[in-house]
Length: 576
Image (cartoon, rainbow, N blue to C red):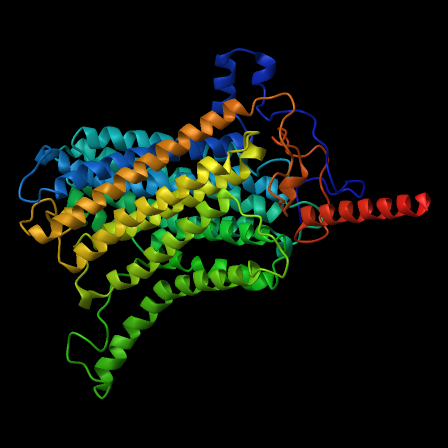
């Protein structure tokens, strides 16, 4: 069932009306009216771009914090910055990675693109999504204020600690509101003929992502209420401000953070067929792989911790049946929550290889967006594999910098994939084409930076360098210096990547302002959004499209080619 136009006279392809989708600003006039229109808009493209823009700023801020902390680690026997400020920088890093960068980037891309992919005129509960943006953005600002004034998990000002807890609750509510809009859109605003089996892979991954947030965020919000009340009145039950991460830190660690990467693999599944212009076989298998990644949300809901392997650390033998069964009961849920998401990613990778297998005589249609997404997905997969090692107590990686390497690889992979999404859908969202010759090197630079920002910490973790919570800026092992210097270089490369991408985006937007406009489908897309104009009008489609397969744009292109071939053959027969 859909909530958009479903009458029989709806046509398959809509024409452009020249509208830019910027809402009422053009009618009111003036820069102030434009700002007001953006800040109060119900256009999902604008709401999504606000989330993405805020996430870009959050990513840059987080990279700056990471650089400061990395500088501290390069001289482990002294403290460069103020010791009191280090506690707040640690909190800023954790909050920045998840709530400042990963969540808004992914959520914004889903809000901006999903209604277009569904053939819908608008987003379900668009005002709720805009409220979600303001709740998230307000919570992020409040968290910065709280940390700047000695709040946070290691802060000394009780009022600012409570303000910090409240800011996390605001950001949780904001992302929850956006998730309601995304999930409802996929379930109720599909174009006529678009069954759930015909939903584009990115939109399917957005649905799984939204449902995971609907599971996780209410649990986080309830936990934060308990923490706030306890801190305000007794500070006994939950350990005061030092207990915040003990009870709510699961939202900032693995495997819960895998949830935020689900749309990354939806992007990968959606872009892979474009390489050779083929259809994806066995779509249900791809759907299953994307859905399996969402099992990570259950780890957050249950707050499952790490384990001891049943065959290590305690001299346990299989012959000791009682102890073995007890350990096995621990291992099975751990394997369920940690390994099933990895199995889902492997399914997506295998199906991607099946799709991109070159055929004889076919020429690849590679793009910079694909490169960004491939690099980002590989980084996320690396983080997932490393997280499995971190969760095993016998390896003694917990409490080391290993975990920071995991979250760095994960979030930077998400950020690079989001950049690929922006490159791919820029024609529809902003009416611009970001040149591949300039953007593709940024994907390689960002990939190198993310690897350097994470892998050296994997090595240092095995060498027992403590994390920041354990005094990781104070150590006297000179053998660790080289790994910390490499990580600092990686953070610097990520900063250059983020700044370079923003500069390229604005430069391309200025250069593409011409009367001729751009192609409606510059990439040879297969899904519904490529049947409307570039940029898409305010209500996305002049006429609601009718979908007859999972690749409607490919059907239209094939029909045009067949019609052109028939016309050419008729002309040739007439000449004879």
